Length: 177
Image 1 (cartoon, one colour):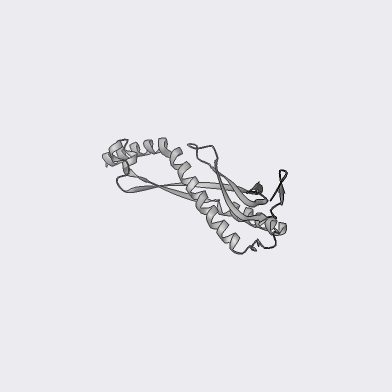
Image 2 (cartoon, one colour):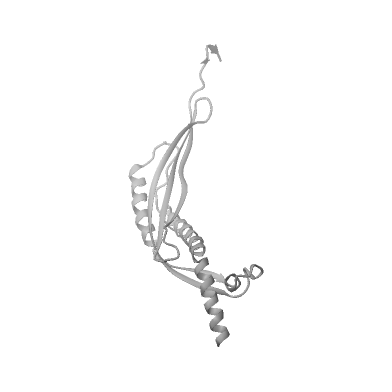
């Protein structure tokens, strides 16, 4: 019994030194997983942006932003579990990754911001590439003393891209075509 309690005390001491790194990795993974799921669900019901008419529905973009921001704030608030192999808690490098996994639980509160940006760039003579990208920035907070800083995760999703072509000019730099 004494040996078990000594091992548990040592493991708890080692866990507190690893807790910040474990929490950062777990929070980043948690955020990316939840963002991906929410974006997939939100964009399945969203209207398609057609390339034929070269129009974007700004109301649809605003609705996507509103729905996605609300659903992400709810989805990013939960209890996260990180699993740490017992070998990592021994302090011996040769045992890292070995043994049964110990669960580490921590509560996370999250918030997200959704932004849209557009690009317009040259794609050759009389050709222009136009694209709209959605950027999501999520901040996650824990009440852990081992890791007081928020974790920020940023990801981008392309929503619309097209290349428009004009007529090739007959005169270019004083020469006839």
